[in-house]
Amino acid sequence: MIRIGLVGYGFMGKMHAQCYAATGRAKVAALADVEADRRGEAASKLGCQPYESLQAMLENADIDAVDICTPTYLHEEHVIAAARAGRHIFCEKPLSLSVESCDAMIGAVEQAGVTMMVGQVVRFWPEYAVIKQLVDSGEYGRVLWASLRRLSPPATWAWQDWLADPARSGGAILDLHIHDLDFITYLVGPPSKVLSRAMPGSRGALDTAMTLGWGHAGGANSYAEGSLTMRGEFPFSASAIVECEKASIRLDITASPSLMVFPSGGAAFAPEVPSVGEGASAEAGGNVSSLGGYLVEIGYFLDCL
Ligand SMILES: NC(=O)c1ccc[n+]([C@@H]2O[C@H](COP(=O)([O-])OP(=O)(O)OC[C@H]3O[C@@H](n4cnc5c(N)ncnc54)[C@H](O)[C@@H]3O)[C@@H](O)[C@H]2O)c1
Image (cartoon, rainbow, N blue to C red; front, side, top):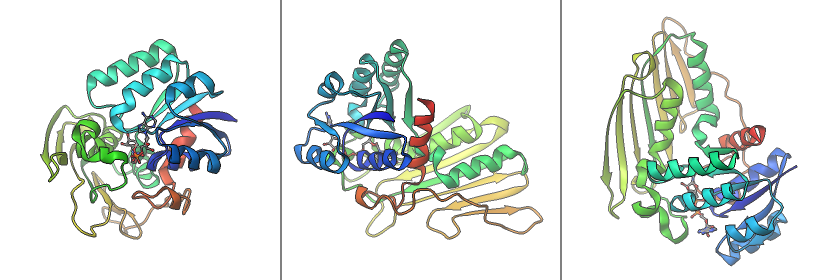
């Protein structure tokens, strides 16, 4: 049983705790959170040892790895502390707020010789994983272009409203849009040129972002947009079109079936999408309805360890 020390018991911390339990291969043995009520809730629900700080947890807990689910502006401090304490690391996305900060974290991890994984979860989300398999199979030829979209009303759950502060969250471009930029890079490699534009929302954060990428592998081009400013009851939504030489692939998580393939000259079909961790996340809140890709991602982290 791999022993995990979780830092931050908010939306993602709760989600990860459920994932570790669902794998049956790891246990949240310790938890650090600055809020006493969250520590108490975790201790009684997970049967773990609570700590007031990551440092106290690193000094006292018997753990193999640290899972960092704290607000983004704390990732650098927490990753470097965990690496120096010789623990393996899972760090939620985005890794950090600047390239210099990411480099410092990677340097500390390399120096300590520990394993670190960053939670770019869309690669593990079942529908997106099927898109990757379809493209990699080569059956539909190369990707000509792709268009990805992720739209959300403003997040309301964040501790001390850190998500609304671009200095602490990076705004939509780093908090939300990064999912699609990561996926397109995973699918067809990095672009040779990028044009990106972000716009401030009412609270000053860069809450809407649009990115055009030219010259991915095989000459593909991409467009992605993400916004955290959708109004009223607009539902969280994510969609993608991947146009290949011999098929159009369409994903829309609000549609049923969510994933469709339209081969040229053939009948449209819905490829099988594995269902994982359905209905298990009710207690985490936030904007997702199943453990889904989070469970696959955490399983992959345990495989790596
Ligand atoms: N992969 C995804 O789909 C996804 C979704 C949401 C959030 N995230 C990422 O997960 C991270 C956490 O986001 P969240 O929505 O869970 O935030 P949250 O505000 O819900 O929870 C943050 C938790 O950290 C605790 N905390 C704050 N300072 C701390 C400290 N110094 N030491 C220990 N605990 C501390 C808070 O008390 C709170 O419990 C962010 O980096 C965010 O970008 C990823």
